[in-house]
Image 1: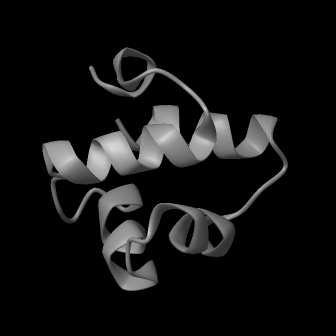
Image 2: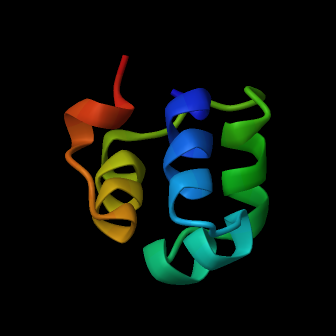
Length: 61
């Protein structure tokens, strides 16, 4: 899942700080998710997908 989020960010030329602001998820939480140190919740996944303008299915394994 982290790879899909990273790819979507790269496609939009955005970074994790931008995603934090747009999704309302704390920066540290997103960094932990992207590092594979923490699982993302369903609600967080929906917030990330909405911020990136993609379907949840694109990000979910």
